[in-house]
Image 1: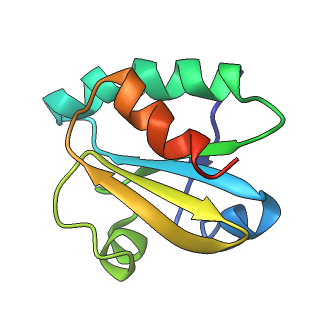
Image 2 (image 1 turned 180 degrees about the horizontal axis):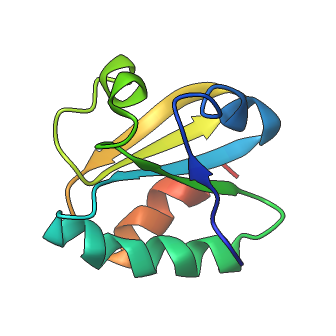
Image 3 (image 1 turned 120 degrees about the horizontal axis):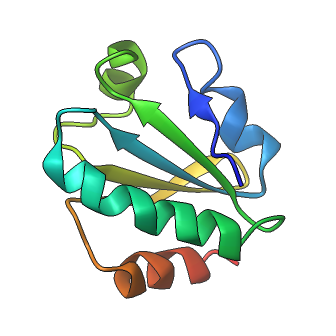
Length: 105
């Protein structure tokens, strides 16, 4: 499954279009982000049709990253019914990320 790249222009509607959404805020130079990325891809495949998964490059979309209060990356944002309900800052194992996600389903 291809994970959409969200931008300052497209971000706002993404959580609205998915009952449950996970957004990976990252940057290309970020080592921990590269560790989290394959986990996010596996979860996108596993929860396809149940969870919308998107990626937001914080370097290219700093306006949205600032509005979301992202201070460190990677940051994973969890949405339910359009509302930000949870976040994880830092690189965590797949089980931890999936635990946060499963609470929303």
